[in-house]
Every structure is written in structure tokens, then in C-alpha cells.
Image 1 (cartoon, rainbow, N blue to C red):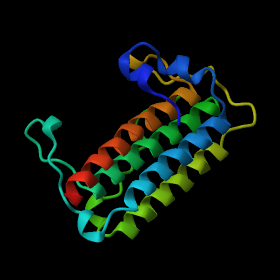
Image 2: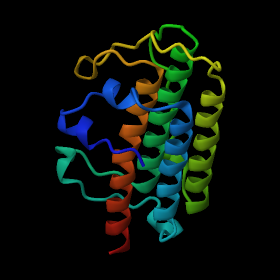
Image 3: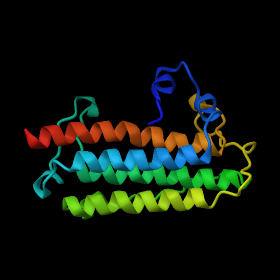
Length: 178
């Protein structure tokens, strides 16, 4: 798994992390993220899917369920992959490219697993859409703290977000099982 700790700590930029990575690394990262979430779900039962965990960082909001975490995390990664495919083709990104499956529609562990596998396939499809010589000069520059992000870095941003939610998923499952 790619180590995002430097980016999270502010000692490394996403662009710096992306500089040494290839599209093959992104395929591997995509699979590792989905596989990590699926491994956590091995301990889940259907009644855990809608359990809303306590979240001290939610600032007055309720916590999230397994279904909510997975729907949100996969939507973020899919948007990152969609933007990355566009950038790799030399096309600037304008606006959002996000669809989040309604988390309330995920009511069983099998449905959550299917959402993860569908997301894996979608993201791989976006990577498949990259030209053999991706354009890494066109950048997306919408979130100032991350700076300009080329195709690789934009994919990483979605993956980093999902990586945090995989950890979140583990905590929700821990609470649901207690």
C-alpha cells in the first residue's frame, strides 16, 4: 500500500508522491484499497451494516454506518479516477464528477461487497481509459493546500481519502461488533 503519512503530515506533497508512481502502481493501489475493505468485512454480519458508530470527531453530527462509509469512500475514489482519466488525456477538469450510491440502499454485507467490487471495476475502467503516453502536464488546481495535481496525483487524492475511510470502516466494525 502506498504510504500517505508524509502527505497527511504536510512533509510531502501529493505531486511529490506521484512523481515516482506509474499507472501500474495505481492499479495495485486501487486493488489494495478494495481488498483491505473487503478483508474488514469478513467479520461483518448484515445487522452491522446499518449500525451507526459513535464518532468523537463528528462535531455534533451522528457517526456513520458501514454502508455510509463505503458509499462515500467509493464515490470519492471514483471521482478521483474520473478526473485522472480526463487529465491523462490532456483535458482540464471543470466541476465535479461525483455520484454517491445512496448509502441507505446498502442493507446487507453482500450489497456492500458488491458496491466495493463495482467501484474497483469502475476505477480500473478509468485507468484503462488513459492513453499509453498519459499527459502529466495538465493539472487540476482546485484545492489550494494540495497545489496542482496531474493525473497520477489526482488519482492519489481520491485514494488517500478512501484510505482514511478504510481505517474509519475498521473503527465502525469494531464498535458494531462490541
